[in-house]
Length: 585
View 1: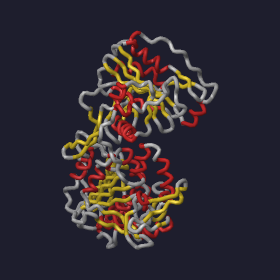
View 2 (view 1 turned 135 degrees about the vertical axis):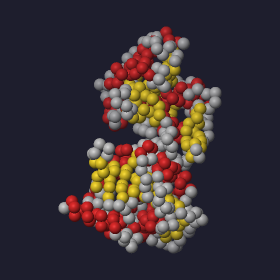
View 3 (view 1 turned 180 degrees about the vertical axis):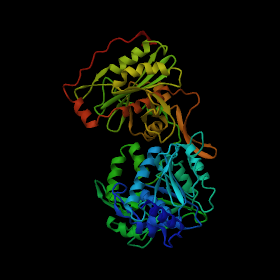
View 4 (view 1 turned 90 degrees about the horizontal axis):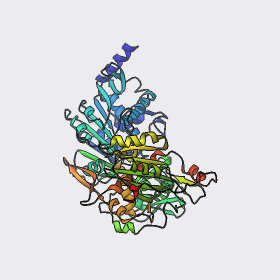
């Protein structure tokens, strides 16, 4: 049986590719299992997916870029494209995703599609690694290979050549000292004159690689035909309307003539839709912009998307997620400096001794200097942040006094307006760049059970707010400082989601506004980063960032905490005692 299968695969590699369009082949041969799709069964392509397939079929087009939202069937389409090449035009295929986990998850999903599709079953075989073990991330088939690689491992990109390069979620790719993963992977296709380079992503920021590549393409937009006037137009969020309080009343207003188009017309409009190039002079690079408003998916109904928007708009963080994942648009970054005086004047009449009832958790972030610790106490509601206090503990960092002061703070409790008391739920202490790392670890390690951890800030806008260090046995946690600052600055610049207590002094705001978000070009590639404003210190900004990171150490749900704070059995607040002599300095 094994010999027969091998012979069959060898003969398959010698057959010429079928003379049918890629889209037709996918619909005829691909079956989606429940593990890989919300729409299991024989794959049916929507009109906008077929247009992308047509571009891949076109021998004059070398590059395809897709600027997309979620819920448009893009991942399933990529699977169909890979399957068609494995079955019909065998070649070296390289699939690049942001992380190793992403690569492995996608490999598992693709394996399920091959098993569910009779035409594909048995085509892929495992490849042995250096130790002789087979691995799902490296597959062989007659006439070609399929490899799944993480963009975070640029060295691996140099090991593989490919004729078909597929890069997914490229806005999650991080540029390292070894170079830009997109450029490194693209270099591996230069051997082939008829290469295909497919890059797609949900955009994150307006300077991201997905937006940049789309701007270099022929910039196609998907247009639908208005059932009333017959004009074609792109469905944009600005043209959606609904009755206040009734998301299900959502409808599209045709931008050409103001025609009111109800949801029931959407499937027919999409089926008759078309791609139009807005930069037709660009040759060889097809770019596609698509959002969830034209998706026929059940969970992309206009009423449902409006309901999601009404919930998301309460916070800049969730509004950015909606903008990226539903509208397929980049989040516009704020380039202006924050106004420290304006923020100072936003202070409200609350503090640790008079907490707002919305505060459900308390966290502390600690920035360490040679002669002091600076701590920011932050309250967390369901979505808002409450900056309650900025404490400075003076003393040599290798002395016992300031650490005793910090420990006292972490053990304090305060009366809560719901009736109980509240204390510090979690704390992140900056371990620095090595000068006092062991001192910090010595403080946090015995207090880990109280959610007190040592952290190190790491750059990268796609980093998680907080995650364990990958080093075995390390007590260190990694804080995604760029990602946190980005969310913090979004809130501050829009005046939403961050509230300040009246105990904060002007120095806190001077340091909070000590950086600005900028875009700098590195080897011709735009990179976002935060830069210090000359002459300003940043201790309170850093401590605020760490305090927000500490929220991710708390797993308790807000509903349970609200009930706990209202319980008369909650622990009583302890009376304050005098601090060490260092506190007065």
